[in-house]
Length: 147
Length: 362
Image (cartoon, rainbow over all chains, first blue to last red; front, side, top):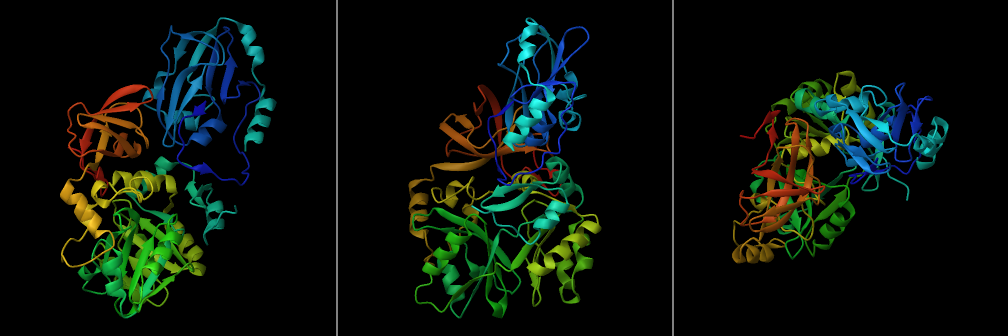
């Protein structure tokens, strides 16, 4: 996720990050989370830290099922009161499903980023790409370093 | 650089504010949800700490003549103590140095409230414009400023005021009452009813806490921006600055052309622009589809390109709204926003978009 536009600079004072980083997920440097499902597909969303930085979401644009996702390329858009941001595909593959509920209820990403606010599911074409992702500890360290 | 803080800094921390750098001040952006705060002001009541704005008292025997020279609007319209007006302060070229509210306080002179980012330059410009007149320009940084806005704002504030301010509830818009330390004005920046309260810094926290205890929500600068944009009000620094005149900023109504012999700073430049034809205008835009118009978004028109000066998502309307500066001759035909690689049709409307909680769109 990368902000295309921000209205306000964040405070230079270090603020304590109170956001969640579930242990059972994998993470990207661009603040997506990835959950490997039992059927081998991977569910993708944006992290609690990311939604907290963006503020209230007002629009979410998800990819259509059946389209191709390429690791590292923009695949969805989340737009908040503050900024529009691209969400990047953490792995390559085919979009299996997108979270249709978000069209009418983008606030689910704010309220439940790791559960009801999931964005899309990919059937990975190369599962070794998952090895390049961060674990919870590495991601928490990244968030702390960016604070 | 160390950020400046208001007397309510610790109160904001207690209320869970996300604090950001705003014009060198560490101010609350929101206290959890900007959209919830926006709705609280439209439906009930909210309180904003705007103590970063600067109160400046202008007094002296020649204060009226000074302000009639300094401001594009005419303080001679303020015939009774307690009345106020909105004005731009201009460069000799007609560019907007700042927009402000000036209150007439009878024997006490005038009170001006200016923006935080421009305050120091404003005061310098004001002092430099005094000349040989008998005028004093006195900044009042020891005053805090709270805006309480929303349909329930008057009911929330009235019980907290001293007896000698008890007439505040009967004030008309753009009118004010004061006592030795406080001033209460029926003004605001949201399109809702409410007050702006100037009070001694040391009294600010207790007043704030009593408002919160009465159910008034604390509101951050994020919602302040979406509320003012829905209300069709310009923001200094984005919708106008020293490179734009009031005439290209939808503020022609604030320029007092009569009497013709009033020589205010910028007058000649504005008259010249008016005579030559005002090249651009600031209009309201509504994006009916998905997406959010942002400052800088290119607007294609049938008379050339323009740009969004401020844009946001309107929580009340559920769509994106914006102010945009476009060529004066542009029509609705083919009006298009170029947003993140897409060409999207936009509708031109006359601000405000929302007033007193209700959509003004037809």
